Image (tube, rainbow, N blue to C red; front, side):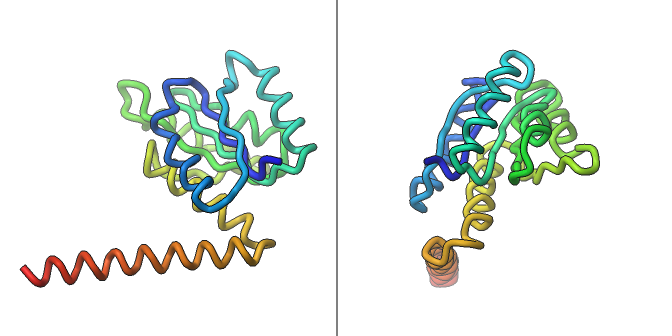
Length: 163
């Protein structure tokens, strides 16, 4: 059972969203990573959300560029948390996707993170934190990962200061 679903609006978004799937795998979180479009395959999107929700999916992560309606289309079909990752895919440098993802009508929120790979990583961490609310083992894994990050900064600082 996928606890998290990662939807990308186009296969060209895969490289930017791959870090999301990698972090979820690292944390032991079952997930589905697939392509579906709010505009080109609205029926597929609706069916995926319904099927995954029925199977126990807890969090949806949606990445899209340009008009970036995927996260909103998913939020319209579930009350589970939806995390949006805007993708820079147009001459506007991702500003269009950012505004489309963050400006949702009241009652249909999309938690929006940064663009591209940084956003992909934070979407995974945010999904993990949501799931950890009811999973003490996952909570412990998250705390251990944070400790590794802190040690990495300390090591980098010691190396820089020792030059």
